[in-house]
Image (cartoon, rainbow, N blue to C red; front, side, top):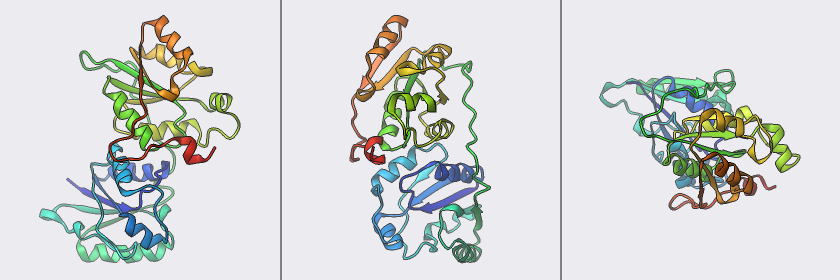
Length: 283
């Protein structure tokens, strides 16, 4: 099997970084090597927004990442980790996100030369390679494993963070998880102008990149029950919310339609700080 190595800060992962990981995974099994906090500070001149433990947690949740481990300490961004040495003659690729590198042409040449010396294939993925948000949801009519319930969660998911990932992880323990993101017009209706930061199709793609999510859909209704058409179509049996998302309208709807309503506490994954989109975006 071809092994693909990627390395970088992976700080505050957005859609472009997820697209990069998706395209890298088309070439083989991806091992992500996030830089340590110390390395990021040495290379960029400032501390990362998110600490190493949180960045590792998020990377391991991405469906296109086979494994994630801390990169060795590097003195510059163009160093190649020693772990790229070809094990057992395996086909190894060093993949680089060209859209995220400053002075890309010079760095590209340096890394390409280092890969050539090590017998590693060098792959640079530029803007055209990671354009768009290719995603086809699992069809609603797809069969489920015997005894598995259909679970839905709903929300804006405008700034994906470790709190969302933990929420998906916990919700998926109740069955096949479908995440329904609010469409842009309804998010503006509920939250006001300036929301959302990202269009619904991009938010759908980002949510779908998390391995605990079986499918991601965009709502088509309005108000706090904007996902009602999708919930009906799915035949959802469980509706999971966190404490912030617990609304009387949702409770009544579930009572009226025989759907189990589950409220989860906002508890971060072990060792990680609490996160909210409001705090991250500042409004």
